[in-house]
Length: 200
Image 1 (cartoon, rainbow, N blue to C red):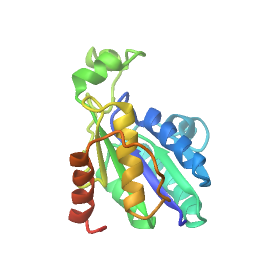
Image 2: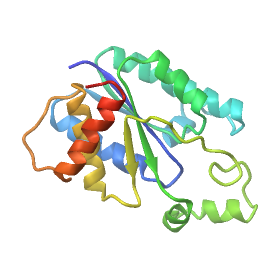
Image 3: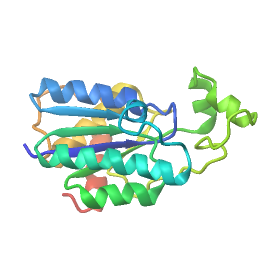
């Protein structure tokens, strides 16, 4: 199979890392070489020293994208999970990587606040933290992601099944005989999205 990059984007606490880890397990079970790049881990290693200005955020995404490009062109199923708030930075990464699949994990702010065990949203809303994405720093939603996950409406199993099925239909991973965690109607929605984007 050819390498690809599965790029999870979305606000903090939307579920990106959880879904990325679950997809990673499935790809490993199918015998694919997989590497996962988590935004928080990258921040403490590859991007240590970068702040949270727009320039530094863009540089962080550029660095993650560069590693994804190297891995995926060498046949690795590469999974990146990073807020990546700016469309221009995401599009720049997309332009450099063959088989780039964007997963937008969408979730309303009120749900994110409820989920946020660290209380970062409440601190940001209270003015105790500044430059927090989704509160006082912008998040530019993807316009045409290959995969749209609405994590407040779908179960984790449904979301993971949708991601895996999309990768199968795109010919990026081998199929597997398994029970679907979504309906035939959802299957048609996945196919229609890929048709609209010109993949099938």
